[in-house]
Length: 189
Image (cartoon, rainbow, N blue to C red; front, side):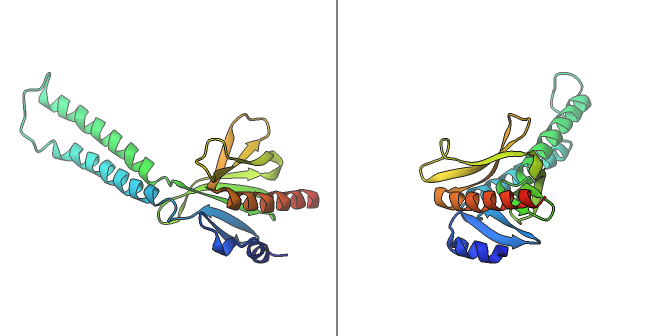
């Protein structure tokens, strides 16, 4: 059975918090854009603040010299460096992506977890081979009521990865499909 048929049987076309789509030889689940609209606004604000700080590093050279402690040129140089570094760090944080996506590729035998920015471009891509996956489970305890997160535990590591967040029912359905297909892919190998 292909990915489109499986996603159709799950009713994925009517989900509210997750988007399900077939990709190459597998499928992907991503957090919906409208659900995380605050993430889009915060990305825009962070990019604006970051660019403003970088511009402020340049503009402060046009201001008249005020009596600074120490030399005016060295103080302005230090302020420029500080404003630029902080501005670039804020801008980088703003464009890194705040929505999550998980892809399953049975042909390569890997799960790909990535962050999506406002333009649905993948950022911070992490490829995990199925042999490194210890377990995949649904976590509800630290989420708001009716919400859940799909988490991945890795062999030999105490750290866990939050793959996607959304409505509990949708996460449960995605979890069931993903686990079933991973078991089938491991048997074929």
